[in-house]
Image (cartoon, rainbow, N blue to C red; front, side):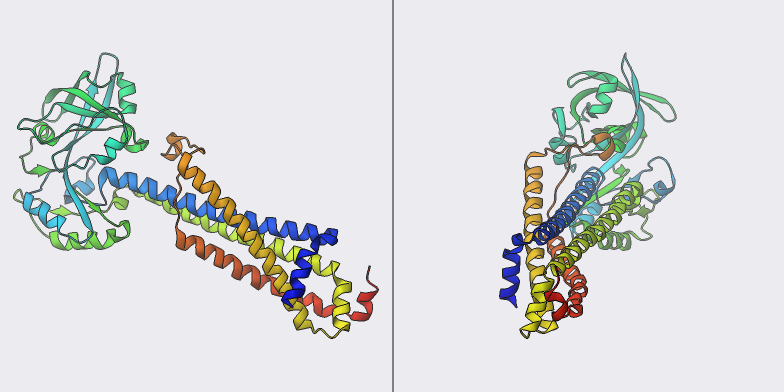
Amino acid sequence: MLFVAKRIYHDGGRGRASASAISIATAGVAVGILVMIVSICVTIGFQREIRDRVVSLVGNVQVINSQSLYRNHSLPIQITDSLMDGLAAVPHVVHVQRFALCLGMLKTNEAFRGILLRGVDASFDSRFLADNLVSGAVPSFGNDDAPSDSILLSAEMASLLQVSTGEKLYAYFFDKSLRTRRFVVSGIYKTNMADFDSNMCYADARLVQRLAGWAPDQYSGAELMLDDFDSMDEVSWQVSSMLFMREDAYGQFFASPRVDELFPQIFSWLALLDTNVAAILILMICVAGVTMVSGLLVIILERTRFIGLMKAMGSTNGQLRQTFLYLSAMILVRGMLFGNAIAFAFLVLQKMTGFVSLDPANYYLDRVPVYFPWTGIILVNILTIVVCVMVLVAPTYVVSRIHPAKSIRFE
């Protein structure tokens, strides 16, 4: 039966309808696989890229003042070196850094801008900002005896204030009294994360502590970077257990929110993409299945006389159904090979060159990201084979309704 199926497949060009049916079925499977693989790789790449950018800016898990969860501004909590060591010892934690937040305003002769000044110290991991610098350099905060007067601005703020690296500008802070500080712009960064670039700038944590009137060991909190995003629940639970009902020297209690709790709007949006991918997978599998069924029916109808002759020669309905299933499998495999080849060629080219661009204002990225989840890609191919083979069983039963005597006269 396999030999007969191969002959029908390779001789399909002798029948105009069969040749067209085989081509259309192959193209349908190829397009379905192509769209599914590209959708998975691009969507997961997009989710990972956005997620990693947010985590690089604020950490996977934060340790903050419990009252800050219910306020629109940051309250101080004591972050000692011993606490930092304890947090760093938690499994899956690869880095811990302290930060201090303070609201203020930057002003030049041309414009002014409200800011969230983020104070960092020597524990700050600056690699992400260094990779996204537009000009200048990331200052080495916390390594000198005196607080640095350097400030790191986003490209959006620098454009609005019309300043560049090396220029001076004044910052104003309002608490119980007006406080003024002069900064020197040391660098300008651009992460394309509008929620952060619109107001976030970086300075020395000791300076922020002085402006806020905090003690040297008081910070807005600490950020924990993890080696695996999926371990965030486990780490959050362990940190919460470690700090449960723990009171610092100033009578404040700790909280340990996760990044998806701090920015639910971003992560809810990313989770919504999974629904879109699922819809695309279902639709494309249906497209592949329908084209395969249609093609197989056309081939069976055009081969009616052949089926009648085979039955007259002693072939059973089961053997003939098996023959057309083999034929369908050949078409399916060929379409999947074409689809996978085109998909991987496109994705590799996009990963290397980034020729398909995006609007950063809407998507946070300037090019379509690509990630290869090999397990997911293999499962999509297996699922396509299983579903298509299952739906192709029904059309083969048309063979059972063909009678040798009538089929030989079929035109």
